[in-house]
Each structure stands twice: as C-alpha cells, then as structure tokens.
Length: 185
Image (cartoon, rainbow, N blue to C red; front, side):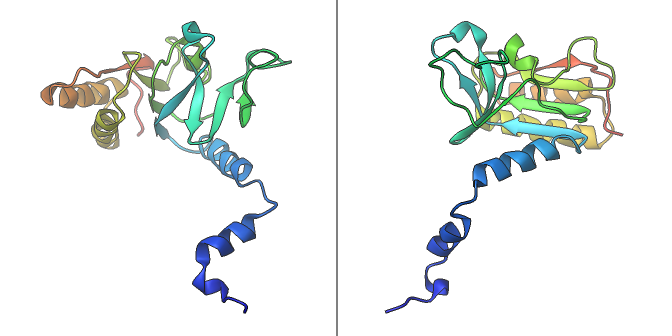
C-alpha cells in the first residue's frame, strides 16, 4: 500500500535532500551572509584540538559541522588530524561589529577575522575568559545589539553588556579588539 507523502513529511523532506550536500549549502549561505551584514553574532561552541590545547579554538562548531582556520596549505591539523567541513585561511566579512561567544578564543581564533588592535571602523567582541556561559553571553549580546542600534559606540555597547552581566552576579565579561569607537550608524 502506497503512503501519501503528506502523512510523512520528515521522511519526504529527507528524501528530497538525498544526493544533495545540505551541509555545504548551509555553510555557503553562512559564509556569504557574513560578507553582507553590519553586525554578526555567534553564540556557540568552539572547535578545539585535544592534542594542541595551547592553540585554543581553531574555529566555529555548527553541531556536526565546522569552519576552521587553515594551518598550512597541505594539511590543516597534521596527517591524522580530524576532517572538518570547511577549512579557510580567514572568514571574509565586511561586518563592522563581530560578536563571538565561544570558549578559548585565543590569537589563532582571532586571526580568522582579520580584525586586530589597529583596525579602524571595525571591532571584534570576544569573551575575556577561556570558558563562556552561552546563556549569559546571549543576554549580553541582546543588550550590546540594542545599544549599537541606538547609535552607541562598540566600546559603550560592550560596557552596557558587561554591566548587565555584573548586575546578575556573573563573572563573564567581553572585550573589544579593534576600533572601540566604531558604530553601526
């Protein structure tokens, strides 16, 4: 007996994607979107390499897929290193403000964004500690985004977010790398 597709929508959706690399499509959408926005926020998990804890995060984790920093033109993490969905030298973005709430965002991770202390008109907002409470970070981003939309500078907006965290008794704080005087408008 043949079943109507409408009675099994999940299976029908899975069958419609069969043969298509949905992960690659999703990552293409993400990498294109970051090129076209003024502000970008990621609240999620880092990609960490257990054999090299000194590196800190090497990228962003999207559940079962990831975008990671290319370490060399040949092999990103050694001959027996893990396979990653997308390996890039940098994540291209024209965003004026990039907010990342993830663990262990050390220098290697920071180099993904091409924003440093000398950057003008752009800012990277990162947690000050190696461990990040994602719920608290999402609440801080809500305040930071509102402050930015009101025309405040990145520095003033981050102060607003940090003040919220302090008022809730949380130890998580964020810092600005780049131009703390940058604005969205």
